[in-house]
Image: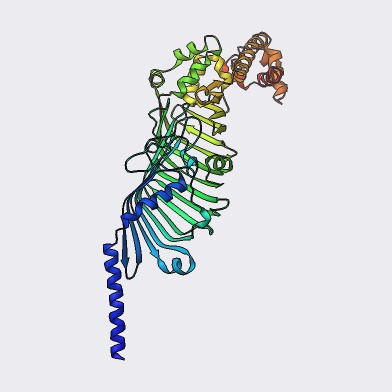
Length: 507
């Protein structure tokens, strides 16, 4: 028995020793050309792997290590890499592959993954051509073969793939929209991503985090009709760190906080945009809009009334003029609620506040940059008071909080997008205010010449008893009050009634 056991022990030692020697001497690189060509035929992109090595651990099992994996971009979009991975480590379980024809990957670790997504000027995306015939002919390079478009890997011939865990470290994802109307370049770096129980047939969860960004998604039915629900959270990320605004006509800076809950279908770009829906909110603190002075634009637009803009300019204090001379708008805070559906972003309850004005907005912005947004601008009460005292016609624009209300609209598409005042509202309010003032002035003169009639009207309309005629007829009485002071005439029932009548007539 001891001889049998010893023989078995020696046998297994020899097997493991031989297997160990095999792994150490096995040249995996010699299999890279057919492997990369097989992948390239499936995705119609050139693929390159610098080095491959097999490994074995008594606990972790068989492993495969790849160095410098690259996938070229479609030449129509760029001559750069679409995807790059510095190192890729896979842990493999052999038994399911041998007996069940299933690939069980115990774990995947990717380091320094870089993905570059590009949307061209004509609206096409480079991810759309993966797996399709190339839009232009590949140019052969010494290290990479030209991929014939006639051969494709059969997806049905691949064994089932299950991955227990995927971990991605120090990833970088960039998105470049080459739309000439509003080019967008977003770069998110230092991403850590995790996937547990990845499967093409069963649902699984995906999480990713970066500085100030958290993303969670639940995916299902990847092979048939991909569907997903996701949650995006932003906390403390600066807007200028996320977007490259060098080509923008207006620059926005500020610290972002917000969240968005959504769902979608498909990974084909157009279908994905068509099915994307969700809602959320976003807030900006310590915000600045450079290359744009909102208040200056709005006040300049008031030249719709001849001479009004010049009067406003003369009435402004030196400190306000200095702020209007700047090309920057400083906001104390800004926030909005949004809803996305049918490729339209609905803007709800948007608010911006600064020390000299605030504004509210609601409307829609399409994915095609078609805007239709109503904007109401409120000047601060102290600024409004100064302007009204100097420019009387503006009084008609005061709201119940003694703020000048200037409504307008942002409309147009792309570079033709612009802001226009609600001319009908402003001219009506200003004309109404002027008309009431003029009629009130004439009525005041008439009533001042007939104090008895004036006092009787005030008493009747105010619900008071008729005053003593002797006292009313005596304007020099010590108990009588001046009849033409502004404070008193504003309180007189006669003037209130007249204002209501005129407002209803002229409205």
